[in-house]
Amino acid sequence: MASPVASQFLNSSSFSNVLNEIDTFIFDADGVLWLGESVMPGSPALVDYLLSKNKTVIVLTNNATKSRAVYSEKLAKLGYNKMINKDSIVNPAAVVADTLDRAGLGGDKKVYLIGTQGIKDELDDLGIEYFGDGPDPVENHHDGSTAFIYDIELEEQHADVGAVVVGYERHFNYIKLMKAANYLQNEKCLYIATNEDETCPGPDPNTVIPDAGPIVAAVNVASGREPIVVGKPNTPAFEYICRRWTIDPQRTMMVGDRTNTDVKFGRDHGLKTCLVLSGCHQVEDILDHHENERHDMVPDFYAENLGSLVPTEVAVPKIAKLDAEIARKISLVEIDDSYLPQPNRFVYY
Image (tube, rainbow, N blue to C red):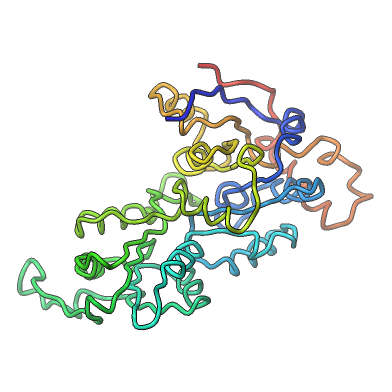
C-alpha cells in the first residue's frame, strides 16, 4: 500500500515551485481539459504555458468511445495547442488494439466486441477483425415463450474468436452478455476490458451516467472470468506510455479529477499526483480515503482547476497586446470566480 502523504493545495504561486521538479504532465480529459463538449476554463492557457517551458504533455483518458484522431480534433476545436494531437493522446481503445496486436491476434481469429466507434477505429488501424458491435435486439433471438433464453446462435465458432473486448456500449443487453459469457468459456480466448469506471461525468450532476464498469462487472459474473483491464489505474496504460515516451516516473505528474482512477494510477506507478476539483472528486474524498487508510488514492497535490495554476504574469497581462487566440485562451481563466486561485493551504490529517 502507498505511504501516507499530506496533500498540498496548489495555486499559481506554489505551482511555479513544483514545475521545476516535473518534466512530463499526464492529463485526464473529461473534468480536467473539458466537460462534455465545453472547454474547462483556463486549461488551454496552462497547456500552452507548459509547452513553452518544454514540458512533455500527454492526454490519458479512460474514455474509449472515440479514437485518438477524433479526440485530437476535439482538442483543436476547444482551442488547445496544435502540438497536442493524436500522437499525444492515450485512451483504452488504442491500448486495447495495441494489446491485441502484441498478442499476435490476427489471421483467422476475430474479436467479439462490446464497444463503440473509438475501439473499432483503433482496431481497423491495425487490421484486427471484429464483430458484434451495435444493436442486437432480444427479439431476434427469443419469442418470449420462456423466462430465460436457453439457447443462442453464435455468429462465430468458439475456436475462431481470439478475444472478447468489453467497454461502454449503449446497446448492451442480455443477448450481448450471453454471447460474451459463452465465447469466454474457451480458456484460450483473451478477455480484455477498456476500463472499470463506475460512472462518467455529465452536464447534470444529479443524473447518474453508468460507464463501462457495470457492463464489465456483468460479463465478469456471467463468464466467471476476470479481464485484463487496460485503462487507469491499471498497468497496461502505463506500459503503453512507457513504450511511446521516455519518462522518469519521479519527474512525471498525473493530473486528474478522480481519486480511484487518476490518483491511484499515479500512486501505483511512482508518479507525482494532482487532483483537480473541477470534476468528480473533492477534498472530502481525499479526507475519506485518508481516514480509511486508502493512501493509494490520496494525491500529493490538489487544485481548483488547471486555470488556477496559470502564473499571474501569464494570466493577467495586457490582453490587448496579445495575439487574439492566446488572449481568448487566457481570458477563460477569469470567466468565473470559482476558477480564481485560492489561498495556499494543506489538507491536514
